[in-house]
Amino acid sequence: MKKIYFLQIFVCMLLLSSCATVYKSPDLKARAPKHKEIAFIPFDAVIQLKKLPKGVSAEQVKQMEADMGLVFQEQMYTRFLKKQKKYNVQIQDVAMTNAILRKNNVTVENIHQFTKEELAHMLDVYAVVSGKVLTSRPMSNGGAIAIAALTGISTSTNKVDINVSLHDGLDSKLLFKYDHSFRGGLGSDPESISKALMKDLSKKFPYKI
Image 1 (cartoon, helix red, strand yellow):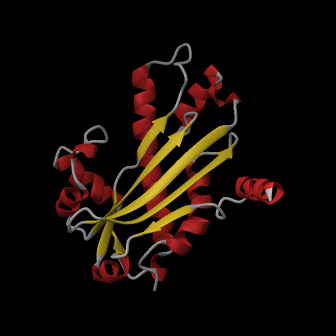
Image 2 (image 1 turned 90 degrees about the vertical axis):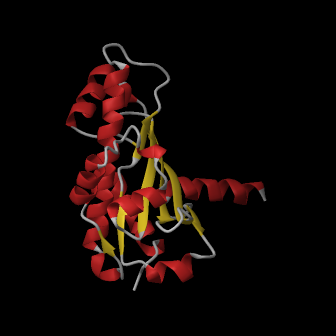
Image 3 (image 1 turned 180 degrees about the vertical axis):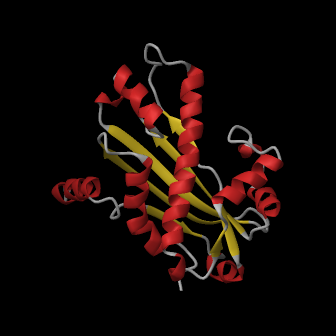
């Protein structure tokens, strides 16, 4: 029995899609068909460092986290857009989403102070897609990668925990949640991670025709 258990864990570590945790609300089937447009908001990104490397300030890490959240938002939106024909819901352009958020003084730092219902009303959409990324090293852009290389942050294997959630704009109810943890090397940038994630997430995400 123990051998089977450890084999399952090993397979989980090898296959990204096999061990994802998916939650679907009992209300999902009744509510999703009523949605006409959804919006992706900036992801909540956290770089989990045991201590700040020499030459890197807390402000730099905070900026990298903000950049990473915007990159993941863009990447997930782009990949869903490529599969638009497979879904019966429109996806708001992230440029418009972010412009509306800025006009309403919503930033990456304070977006958590707003309910998903408030954000959906602000964006004039039926539901909001959000996400959270926990990573052990910077990976948002060229600057972050350069800092990682200079400070040695990237020398260890990168662990990434990521989740994608869908909340109804009517009352902020959680309708769908997808969680996954995996490890990667220097190639674990937002583009490659979102690409790998979409292979499985796109099959489980609501609104499929």
